[in-house]
Amino acid sequence: MDDQHGSRTRAAAAGVAAAVSGAGLGELAAALFASASSPFGTIGGALIDLAPPAVKDAAIALFGTADKAALLVLIAVVLLAIAAGAGLLEARRPPLGAVLAAALGGVGLATAVTRADATAMAWLPSAVAGVTAAWVLRALVRIAGRPRGHEPVQGGIDRRRFLVWAGGATALGLLAAAGAQLSRAGAAAVTVVRDALRLPAPASAAPAIPAGAALDVPGIAPLITPNDEFYRIDTALVVPQVDPADWSLRIHGLVEREVTLTWDELLALPLEESRTTLACVSNEVGGDLIGTALWLGYPTRELLARAAPAADADMVLSRSTDGFTASTPLEALTDGRDALLAVGMNGEPLPPEHGFPVRMVVPGLYGYVSATKWVVELEVTRFDAQTAYWTTRGWSERGPIKLQSRIDVPRRGDRVEAGDAVVAGVAWQQHVGVDGVEVQIDDGAWRSADLAPAISDDTWVQWSLPWTAEPGQHVIRCRAIGADGETQTPDQAPPAPDGATGWHERTVTVG
Ligand SMILES: Nc1nc2c(c(=O)[nH]1)N[C@H]1C(S)=C(S)[C@@H](COP(=O)(O)O)O[C@H]1N2
Ligand SMILES: [Mo]
Image (cartoon, rainbow, N blue to C red; front, side, top):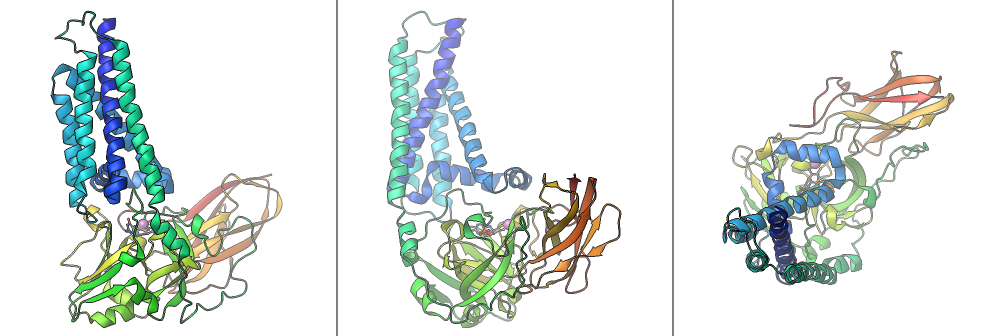
């Protein structure tokens, strides 16, 4: 019994060692020859694309912007479980385990070559990973000896020999993965290029922020969100590395003239600056998937005018280098709002994870239908002809931002002292604007909060209200009034399919 147990453990260990060596060598091959086609990254990316929308929404809700780290861990756990299973299978029915390992490599290979950003060598890393894993698995299981039927193996197994080989294969894999990491860091040429970049001064600077727009209330979200605090949402497991020297934007489809724009051509254009609040459709009521930045870029309206869209076009499908797409109403890109092909964020080139070198920013629309990062293509088309990434996964094809408000202060879990206190937060409905915010404490009357001057209708606005806090538990809720007269609805809706609604409520204890 013990022996059989031992041989099973060895078979599973052989599977894990084979997987680690295959994955490690595959990652090294990717780092050296095809950086976008890391087996881990492609299989993970495929899992993200295949995962039911509900799973993705749950991941975002559970882990927020840490969803990537959580996903990487999950993929690693799943792959290790499959690897252990392949080891057991190989011990029982050789060469089925090795075939399974090779097949996984095959899946990685197929995914890698069909991804939007595939290069000529995209097949190589997964092929290396699959062949290595299959070969190592066969060799290790042979060394481990295999149980015949249900008979325990009698003697003959050199445990030390197995340990040495399995350990060696694992160490080799880990070393290769470390080498891949080093080589990636060295090849982070794009980061070096970005660090050395000086963006041109804007031809048209953003107006000054009105005095008093930023309230002096500790704990309120800063009016302008620093880049390193800006929420990040995308489907890219590995941040795409786009060298501006290789970047170009192609505008095509229902246009009179196709237009291609290079990085140097883009920077030579008169760039404009504007402040816009970006918001994610997955943001729950009270959530923090929202932020405001100073963007620098070229107006999409000017750009599209060069291409001259056909009269029957009503949508622009923007495409990222990694294949993500967003469907934006043509009107929103041409109607005069500050819709930008952006290169700068808060005075710096876009950070890599926010779309370096070029992304879209469109006031008034959720990010998933407008804010394509690492953008390389604008296809002028029609809503009835094309669908975007999230639309095929159950989200609405259009995503105008809904009227919302949020309580920032008191923060959750804050101890509020009895006496003079303050309630404060932000409210937004980009490109419509906010006219007021009302606050209700417990079942009291709705009171108008003090609204700070807005930067523009395209940004969130801060609000505050003095409050004489009496000891005990209190429920604070807020609602915004839009510049079009609409009062924020109390009806609760989840983020899917077109944005959450409802009032933000916070329970606080005073005293
Ligand atoms: N290439 C690419 N661009 C993308 C996405 C993506 O998954 N891939 N996600 C969009 C979504 S859903 C949002 S909310 C915004 C978020 O932009 P940020 O990460 O810079 O805050 O990017 C948009 N642009
Ligand atoms: Mo989003």
